Image (tube, rainbow, N blue to C red; front, side, top):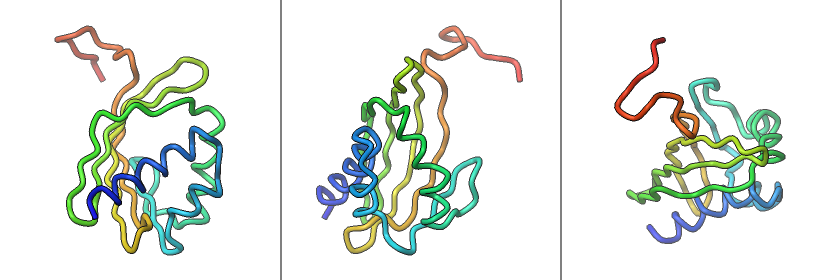
Length: 123
């Protein structure tokens, strides 16, 4: 099951790269919910309305980790946008019956990091 869940997670991100909404819809459950620092448990329809347009600028995802644990997969990736901006996030995907039912997003940082190595930014 672990390898199957990781494969489903990969298909989710690849759909954004390929601009293939049907491929994403195939792995997102009807009762799906999405939460991020900006979004509080969006339903499936609102997720596609709000998040799918981001596919237009996504060029690639480089996976740092794909960690299966039961029915969850923890994914850390570096995303690349077509205009050169990159970012790093971690997401927790919960799966049931071969579909993603919940995504929790934890925003990372921009790449390259705006702070010098060993340094920090004042808030």
